[in-house]
Structures are given as structure tokens and as C-alpha cells.
Length: 570
Image (cartoon, rainbow, N blue to C red; front, side, top):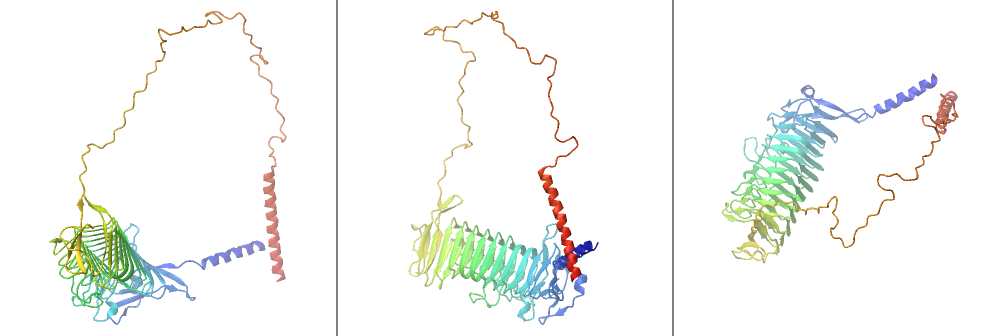
């Protein structure tokens, strides 16, 4: 019994050790839970409650996940602070700030992950944020979510109907290492309106500043408004930005705002769909940028605006139906290289100036543009009265452009390459030159071009091209009983049989007598078994197993005896 009790003690000790490393538990985020937290008022005037992870006396996190069990209507900000990892599971519910002053969610150096998806696949909703203050800049950014340091991950969330006075009416992130948006819908946001409803903006519905890595994938950014820049996505001072399988559509930069932090130092709108400023790498794959407007009276970059970007890569990107004064589809300013693959820039309009499809400007950085299977066509300027696909302005630098052959509908483009410098740009003339480009030259360092598309020759009507199975020749007919040649050269001799038909041979056939008479069975001897029936033979395998069992039993006994002796000696 003593040995058994010792064994049970060991088992209980192991169970206690396992229980000590149980992972952190979750906290139900309910109205009752929030009502027990202290509400505070920030110096900017908005109210908030602090949501902190729970820790034990040793500082170990015990609760770091907050679960919404239903919709929450709050008039204060949920603030997460501290250098910890926090998870907010919305479970398909709605977090409504009801238009009260401040962000819906704000973090301070906390790594926050927001999971919106419910059991039925529905998205969580964040709405009613109002990041507007009376002049203090702290609360003027991030109407829906404001992340001040720390990483931010948002999955399966609908962020709608939020307002910010400065930037990031939906999402504002600054100083983060990683920001990831996955399956996020952002719509009906307004950036750049102060508490009096007056324009006062830098813009950016989704605004990332000083972020190392940004990833936006499988998302939709649509129907948002900014008083100045980036009504869709805005990236400022970021290293690597990746946008994948995302739609950026019908966003509008209105064009009335302050001149703070604007690359052109003018109160004009730019980058209604996407703006990238001081970014190392901008990578876009499977992206659609359509129907965005940067105020055709004086705006720049209706679909995309890029300023001081090292490299832009576009693969399977569609930029269409966007409008601006300069660069209806794309406007670039001192971009190192632009790589386009399987990309279409079509149907964009420069409302009053140049660059219906693209406007490329460089004065401090030489620019290279490479297009592979890329179409730039049907873009216009001067309010749509003239065709204009690409406009380039080289000021003391070189612009190298190369486009490979491709097709567009029933037309084809042979491709061309050329290096433009300050002293030589586009040759004069109304007709297409040998490089396949229509060119007009009003100065020695700027001009516009329209790709020279030629009609493909009509293919002759070959009729029904349905494949017809081949007609196989009839197999030769082989007679079953071939008739001999009636006039053979040599007669066919037929041998007489040894025995005439109908007669038996003279020698009868002998039939041997069987060893056992018919009707009797032979006797079969059956050997006696070595082991009597009912006994089981002891094989080598069974003997070995029995030996192992006995050996283990003896070993267990010795262990218990030795353990007891050591205890007694102690």
C-alpha cells in the first residue's frame, strides 16, 4: 500500500505541474464588464476605458483575449495599452461608437489582433468613430482604429461610417513594425473635416506612417472621401507595402484642405485611390483601381499617386475609369522604376491637362518603365477631347521606357523602347513614328504620346471548325470457307485415312485396370499429432514475451524496494 501511495503522489505532482502552464484564458467583453471599469477623460476631451491583460503575481499573462458575446453601443474609446499581445474576437458582432468624440479602438504600443468573423461567417463591424478634436492633434487621427506603436492585424472586419479630422478615418497606424489587413471592407468614411464640418485634412482613409511592412489582401476599399490625399489607401514613410487581390474603387479626394504634409505644397487633392510617399517598395498583384476621382479641376493622380518611391511593381493590375487634372490613371514623381506585367491602364481621363493614362515626372531621379504584356490605351485628356496615354516630363534626368508587344481586343501593338533625355524627348509630327508612338513636342524636355495600335487582319472564315473523325477503310472480307481455285495449276491430293470411315481399327484399345476397384476408397494413413488435442504448443515468440513480462515485473519490484530503503535511510 505504501508503494501504491507513493506512486499516486508522483502522478498528482505531475498533474499539478501541467496545470501551472495552462494557457491564458479569455475575458467576455460585455456591457456589465465594461461598466465596472473606470471611465477617464483625455485632455483632448474624449472619454475612454483601459482594457489591460490580466497577470498573476509573477507578471505572467493569464488573460489576454477579449470575446464579444453581443453587439456593444459605447460612447467612449476602448484603449489597449502596454507592450503585450492582445486579441479581440468580435464573433460577427458590431462595435458602435455612436458618433461620440474619439476613436472606437486605440492602442498604445500594444500588439493588437482583431478577428471579426462569426460562426456563421459574418464580419464584425466597427462604426461610429469620430476622431475630431478642438485643436489637439492626438485625437485627430484614426476614427475607427488608431494604432500608436505596436503591430496591428485586422481580419474579417467591416469598418464603415467613421470620421477623422486629419488622417485615417477608418484605420490609422504609426510607428508599427507590421500592419496587416486581411478580408477587410472599408467604406463610407470621411477624412478631413473638423468639429465645425470644415475641410482640414491631409487625408488617408487607411493611413500608415513610419511602418516597416504593410500588407493589404483580399479587401475592398470603396466609396470613401478625403478632403485632400488618399481617399483610399495612403502610405507615408514605409519600407515595404504589398497590396494583393484588392479592389480600390469610387473614392474621391475633393481638393479643399490645408497645405500641411502635401508633397506638392499646394492645397490640391492627389491619389484618390492610392498614394505612396517616401516608400521603398510598392508591390501590387491582382489589384483593381477603378472609378476614383482626384478633382478634375486641379487634382493629381486619380487612380494612384507615387512620390519618391524606389520601385513600383504591378502584376495583373487594372487601372481604369479614374479621373484627375494631371495623371488620370497614374501620376509618378521621382520614382526609380516601374515594372508592369499583365497590366491594363485604360479609359482614364486627365480632365484639363496631360497624362490620361500615366503622367511621369522626374527632376532628381532617373526613371525606368518596363511593360510586359501591358496595355495602355483609350485614355484621354483635355476633358476627353484628345487621346493621350502617357505624358512624361524629364527635367535634368533620363526616362527610359520599354514596352513589349501585346494585343488589345482586335488590335495589336508591336512594342517599342526609347530613352528620353532633357535634350531629346518626342519627335514632332502628327503621324506615328517608327517606334509606334504618336508624338507631339512643345519643348525639348516634355511631351505626350499615344500608343500606335494597328488593326489585326481579319481571319478568313474557315467554316465549322468542329473536328470530324477520320473515315477508316473497310476491313477486308475473309470468307469463312474459302473456295479453292477452280483451275489450280497442280491438283490437290487428298490422302486416304488409315481406317475407312465408319470402321474401327483392327487392334482394340487396352484399358488398364484401376488400382482401387470402382466404388471403393483408398486407405489414407493419418499421423498422430506431436501434441495432444487441446494443448497449445509453446512457440519461441510466446516464450520470449513471457520472459519479458516476468523481467519487467521483477524490475518494478526492485525499483519500489530500493525507493523504500532510500526513504528509510533518509
